[in-house]
Amino acid sequence: MGKKIFNEDRYVNPYTDFGFKKLFGTEMNKDLLLSFINSLLHGKEKIKSLTYLNTEHLGISEADRRAVFDVYCENEREEKILVEMQRGEQQFFKDRSLYYSTFPIQEQGKKGSWDYQLKAVYVIGILNFTFDHKHDTYYHHEVQLTDRKTQEVFYNKLTFIYLEMPKFNKQENELSNMFDKWLFVLRNLTRLMEKPAALQERVFTKLFKAAEIAKFTKEEYDRYEESLKVYRDWQNTIATAEHKALERGLRRGLEQGLEQGLKQGLEQGLEQGFEQGEQHKAKVIALQMKSNGIPTNIIVQCTGLNANEIEKL
Image (cartoon, rainbow, N blue to C red):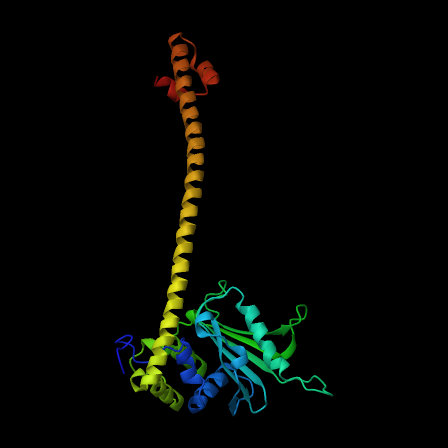
């Protein structure tokens, strides 16, 4: 098989392009995708079957993209489902999601007489970053067109679902449903050395077998190694950019702080020096007045010193 990427890696990284498609983008593992989507759409009518659709018009070369619609499929009701594993933060990722949602909408157009009735479209984004910094524990976003005044859903056939994976921190003993279990797997798969006891469902047994790197063919391993390299290069690029931004921010903050500190220090120093000078001057005058036999109450009025201070002179 060749040299291993990491000795401790037993399972494939689902955040890589190869890893996600290996687990969710093949006919052999279609039941894994079906289970994941049904857990995500909990409360809606259960999907019974999925058909993979052509993704060529959605994709570009892996090395040049931050977001990839790895899976494009439809269910038995002909509802369209796009799944994106987005490994790096992108400034306009919401715009991108909206743009990609137009493909399955336009494809439903029919020539000739057509009443414009559409099948539902779901855009699912599994995000390896956070975008909602106001809510630390809110990681499952479900977005639809809504009337701002009534707060009622205006159109329920276009749904965007975003999962902020870094916010999901549940432990194995806290997994209470299939949705929790799927997010736990996606978040922790590469860190695990065996299937956790909490994941007893048959679908997870199959997933862990499919994810085991040691069982890859040489071709699969080589493709995974290349995909993992792209993923790590991207992670390093992000980390470097964040580090430089932090350094730049700290340097700018330090410069501003020093400038402000010097200004404040000078002002405070002058003010304090003036106060100390005035107090010394008052004591000298008070001492002279006291030596000349002037009553204490008069000295208090003239110098601003109190009687105790004058008595100590």
